[in-house]
Length: 444
Image (tube, rainbow, N blue to C red; front, side, top):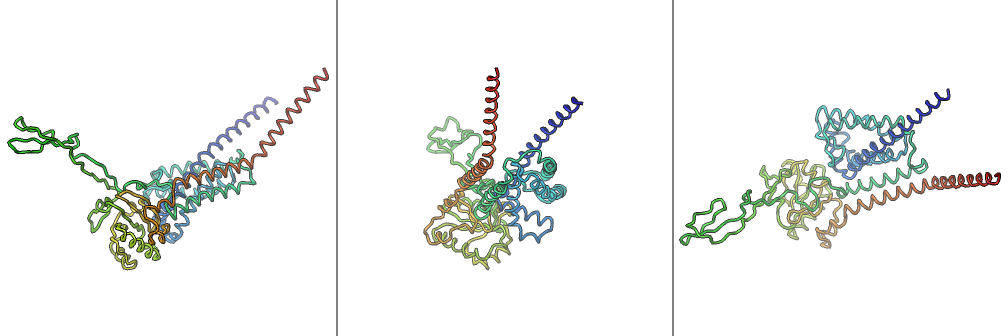
C-alpha cells in the first residue's frame, strides 16, 4: 500500500512538472508571438489601416470603414498587451480567454482568405514577415491549440508579478505601445520595414559599364594622319600606330520596376525621381478622402518651395477625372501624376503625406499634419531641417529603455518581500541548527 501511494505521488509530481514545463514553454512561444505581431502592427498603424480596409472591402462590411483608424491602433495594442500578459503570467485566466475570442474570429476568416485567395497576405506581421494565406491559417490553428491548453492549465505555473500590481503592468504596456502607435500614425513609423527608406533612392540606380566583359577602355590609333577609336576586341593591324587610350564613360542603368510614374500612359519615372536638387513630393493614397483643410497647407508649402527653386509634384493612384476635380477644389498649381496604389502607400504613410528629396535621395517623410507649416512658410526653417524634429531610432530606444526599466523596477518592488522572507527563513533555519548543535554538545 505504501509503495503504491509512493508510486502514485511520484507520477503526480512528474505530471505536474511536465504540465508546468509545457505551460512555461507555451507562455514564451505564444506570448512572444503576440507581442511581435502587436508591435509590428502598432508601430505602423497606417499599414494596418490599409490591410483592414482591404479585409472590409473583400468581406463586404463597408459600414465598418469609418472605424479603420481606430482598429489600426487598438488591434495592435490589444495583441501586444495580451502577449505581455501571456508571457509574464498576468491574468492567467482572462488573457487566454480574450485571445481565444479573437482567434474565434481570425480562424474562419483566415480559412476563407486561404481558400478564396481574396487577399494577397494576412498582414499578421505587417511588412516584416510575408506569410502565405495557408501558412497563416495553419499558424492560427497552432496558436489556438496553445491558448486552449493555457486556458486549462495556465494556473499550474505562478505568475511573475503579484496580483496586486498586475494593473500597473497593463498601464505601462498600454502606454508604451500606444505612444509608439500614435507616433507612427501622426508622423511616420519609428521602424521602417518598407523598401523606400530615408537616406536611399526611391528607385534603384546602378552604374554599369557599357561593355560587361571588362572592356572599359577605348584605344586611339593613327594611320596617314587619320585618328580612329577602337575597342580591345577590334584593335587594328600593324599599319596603325597607337596614340592614346581613355576609360569609357559609365552608363547609368535605372531599375524602377517597383515604382512607375506615368503621365498620359507614358513612363516618366526617371525624369521625376532622378531630378537634381531639392524636390517635394505630395502623396495622395485616397484623393477623395483628403480633408479640405489640408489644401491650404499644401498650397502654402508649394508656394514656399517654388519660391526657393524647389520642384514640386503630386502623386496619386486616382483616375484623371478625380485629379481634375481635386485641382478645381484645391486650386493646385503643381503637376500631378499617376502611380500604382500599393507602391504609393509603401513610399510614405499618411493621407496626404509629403516626401523631401535631395538629388533623388530621400531626406525625410512625414504625414502632412506633422509638418510645422508656420516655420516653413515664414522662412525660419529649412526643409532639410524638419527631419531633426523626430529622430526615430533614438525615440524608439528611449521608449523601450523606459518601458523595460519601469517593468524591472516594478518587479523588484513587488517581489522584494519574497527575497526578504527567504533571507529571514534561511537565517532562522541557521539559528535553529546552531541552537540544536549547542544543546547536543552540552548534553555530551
